[in-house]
Image (cartoon, rainbow, N blue to C red; front, top):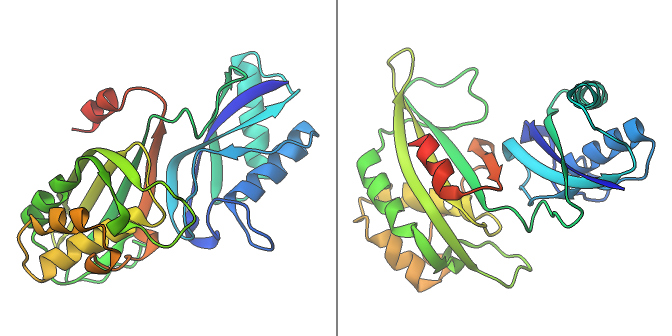
Length: 263
C-alpha cells in the first residue's frame, strides 16, 4: 500500500462541511467516491481538519492509502486529470504527493491559515459571493490592534462553539487585518488573516464577530484580551456568516517561513 497526500480547493457554498455526514453532501464523500472510482479500491481519505458548512478552501489536505502507483510526473498528471474529470466542478485536486507510511494529514500539520474577507462599501456587490458585505465604514486600525492580543498560546474557550473537543488551548502565530481598495474606488476589502497550529469549532468566525463587536461599540483594543482571558463565550461576539471564511493553506513546514511569504 502507498500513502498519498492530496491538496485540493473547493467552494463551500453547496457543501454541508468537509467531514462526512449521513445523507449530506460533503467534500470528504465526494473525494472518496472519485478516488474509489479512479483506483477501483475501497480507499478512505483522512482529512487534515474539519471545515464548517459554507466555508471555502484554497488549500485543504487529506491522505489516503492505495495500491495504485504514482511514480513519475506523467503518472501524477494523468491521475490529477482523471480525478478532476470525475469530481464535481466545485472541487479540484491540484497536487498529490507520496508520503511515508507513518505520515498523517491532520497530526503532522504544522499550521493552518484562515482568511475572512469583508467587503466594506456603500455599493452592494453583485459577483462577490464569498464575502461578508458591510456598508458602515469600519475602523481597520482598531480591529488590527485588537486582533494582535490573540497572538500566543492561550485557552480559546471564549471563542469556542459547543463541540466535543476537550482541548481548548491553541497557539496563534500571526494575525492581522489588512485593507485593500476596491477596483471601482467605492470602498475596500478587509482581509482578516489568522495563522495557528489548530482551531476550535467556529473559532475564527467567533473571533471575527468579536472584532466587529469591538469596532461597532468603539471599545479599546485591549477588550479582546479581556474576553480571551475570561474564557466566557457569552462575552465574545456572535459567529459571523461562514461564506466569508476561507482556509488558505494547511502547511507541513515551518510556520515562521510561511509567514515571511505573506508579509
